Length: 252
Image 1 (tube, rainbow, N blue to C red):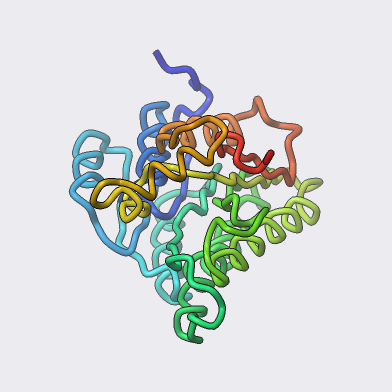
Image 2 (image 1 turned 45 degrees about the vertical axis):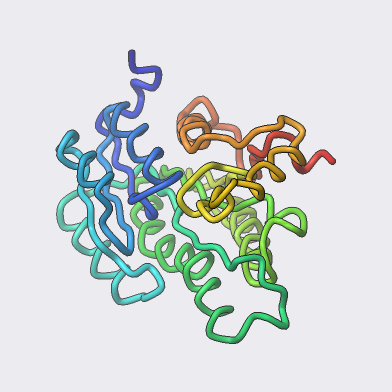
């Protein structure tokens, strides 16, 4: 049963589709009948399977740190379709909780270029399309590290704080032009990006679960389901909001 029939035929452009939260977001929108243009720096076996199952998925390998690559990808999309209804800026990488003195300039730039600058570049490619059609929804992927310390290292935490600020400013600037912008701040989500926490006896993963009020990690699908709501007309009056999905981590 399709709980979101309103997405039938809608066009979604998104990053980070090869694994984790992005993969589940792509599957959720495809199952709801959307047309998805997804990008990732690499093509996974999982996204290949999804592409075979859903002909409405168009996957492209893109290095989202590079303006030229993003422009080439979005120009290809614009030649195929005339509207973009939803933009999901999901791609991101961790910094292994490195404090500032353990972070060199190259690492800092890589985190910021991947997690924050890519959102700026892709949004600036897609937003004009949305403004022309006078409607559009943008959902950015932040983190609890954008709200509190301890969810990442110096670069990751700074970048995620930047995402929240960027999201709020986008909402402020374009809400009266038919554009809705919000972001999601996940806590402990069991994705390949967090595989190191489950390595060996999984001591780190167990400790994170213990420190989380809900006493568990979330599944990527739970974040995807929140995304469906935020992108739907049911959230039409929701602008510039940070939606946490963290098992109560930030209430401590």
